[in-house]
Length: 79
Image (cartoon, rainbow, N blue to C red; front, side, top):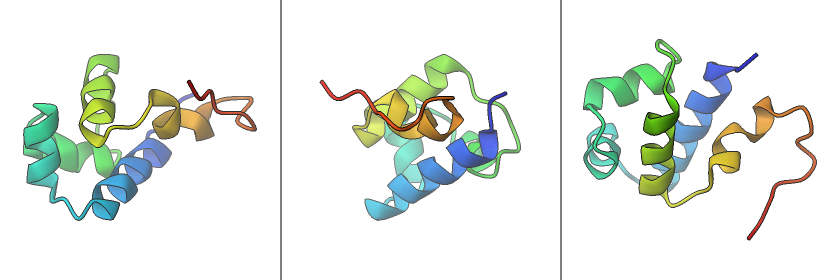
């Protein structure tokens, strides 16, 4: 099962590390600002294309956003 709360918190954490507003992340990821808010609060499920857009905007890999949801999270792939 996917824990959208963990993913949302991770996105929020990475966004705040960059000192970005939700609007800034929305602009860079081409996602509606209200959708960023919903994702961070786990009020909505996010699609894979949206997750990829957000990861690209944050310049992180997908596993950095979802690693807590993986059964084996001791290792994160680094290329």
